[in-house]
Length: 139
Image 1 (tube, rainbow, N blue to C red):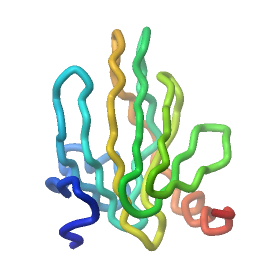
Image 2 (image 1 turned 180 degrees about the vertical axis):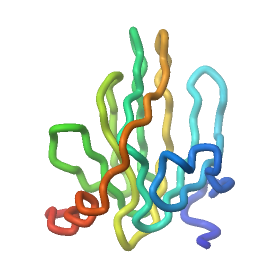
Image 3 (image 1 turned 60 degrees about the horizontal axis):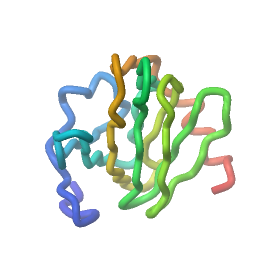
Image 4 (image 1 turned 45 degrees about the horizontal axis):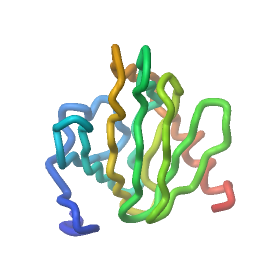
């Protein structure tokens, strides 16, 4: 296991949410205050399921890539390759997924944007076929 990828802690195995991931992820809470902030680490080829951060007003999620390479995709749009320094602003109520590149560890800081009546809906897994096809996408 990688011990250090960035200045942020690796965290513990993300067992609580393991059912929503393909592969192993790790979760390190950084702040549980007004803007909950977590460091999420993905082993190579790990990705989360399609999901939606619902909110009546406000809400959504912000990802800040701090180590490795990964992917982000919104439903109906092409996948986007991610590298250190990239920032992804995910609006509320948009179905999406994110995770590591096939051969690389990946870390992002995830911030939950405050809103009203917020909750996360976890959906289907990103299929192996769809994920494997990412190697064909030009990074």
